[in-house]
Amino acid sequence: MEWFTASDYWLTRLVFQRALAAVYLVAFLTAALQFRPLIGRRGMLPVPRFVERVPFRRAPSLFQWHYSDRFFALCAWAGCAVAAALLAGLDSLLPLWGGMLLWLVPWALYLSIVNVGQTWYSFGWESLLLEVGFLAVFLGNDEVAPPVVVLFLLRWILFRVEFGAGLIKMRGDACWRKLTCLDHHHETQPMPGPLSWFFHHLPRPLHRVEVAANHVTQLVVPFLLFTPQPVATAAASLMIVTQLWLVLSGNFSWLNWITIVLALSVVRFPADPPEVPEAPLWFVVVVLVVATLLVGLSYRPVRNMLSRRQVMNRSFDPIHLVNTYGAFGSVSRVRYEVVVEGTRDDVPRAGSDWREYEFKGKPGDPRRWPRQFAPYHLRLDWLMWFAALSPAYADAWFGTLMERLLENDRDTLKLLRRSPFPPDEPPRYVRARLFRYRYTTWRELRETGACWERTFVREYLPPTRLAGPVHRP
View 1 (cartoon, rainbow, N blue to C red):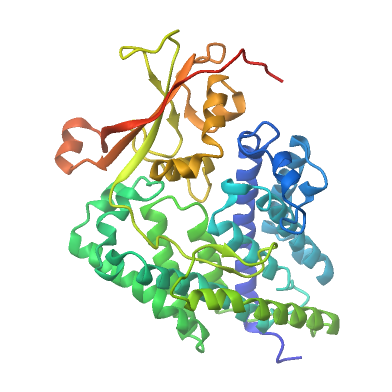
View 2: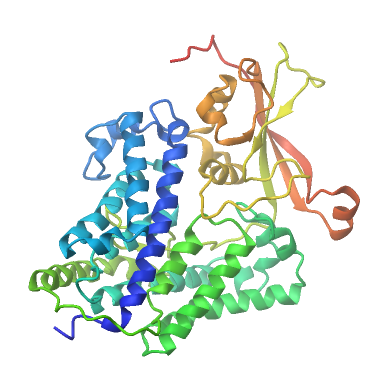
């Protein structure tokens, strides 16, 4: 069975598994802390309402059989516990089949969450975590050397992530071909980080170099992943450096980190492999059957990747086994933000005391500098960015958000940085207004201390109040 395993990659597997467990932990923690106001029983898009109209075959999930906020919390915190156990190396202390079952648990739990998460879980990195997490089940533990075919399939995922993203850029916005997209991207990206202002103000020739280097990393380097070592390690290392550059320049949830984890599966660390027994026949059969299935399912993602009508971040099966990826096929030139305000006045007027709600990550107060949140995912803040692009992105949930603010709903307010109203004094009216934001210049920053300058564009939602008294559960 020497052809089946690659003992030189035992340390690679160890690093990959521990890093993946850390990403799992962040994902489950995000779900546990945010689900009630988003998809809970009184959430903006409640799970019970979703499972009433979507059958199990289209969205397999534990919550198709039973849902309560307490049960969801139990699953999310159980996912945190299992991820922490995997991070600590519990899978190495179990027999091979036990380690595989332990890795299967977070995958099944997170699949259950994603499949009922609706628009709050519609991001490409959700499917990417599930696809990578499924393969991790079949990497084995200390009782067997890493299977070659699983290592190959991990490279195949990394290839599709990078090459697919490169193709969508070349086929999409002309600024990628003109090397000018980064003249705008650092300012208009969904959630800027603490260094994004400085990245935006880099010299424009350096922005051209950034874009050109990105094209090389995404369109050329991925092919080197399938070459012999040490070339494959060098290619993966270049991808890691590129992803770390993106980590510094913005808040992209765990997209960059899961990509780094994938790249680590390619790196061969210099270490003498321990003596391990030969892979048992049942393990070989299971791995080869799963690999054959995944190769067959790759047909549709490959067809999409090569199509002129390529789409981004699409799952082609309900359990997210093989997916298509991509990011920023188009880049906004102007940044818009929805600013939400409330007032205690009985009748809203032009001179009313409107107070602004502050979100954790998205720009609001022009003087408040962006913070680093990634790999933690602020789901409401991300969707507010989409809402600013078009109200159609927020049709399903924005009205409920405003209702919850009028109620001073405790769980909803936990999603925000600060509410301008005391818990026992909710606003009588709320409204939303659309502003154009731009980064200040170096001179403006020195004179005002503000990193943003904003200009009123139009009313997004007129002053609104509750139709009747608030009834709390």
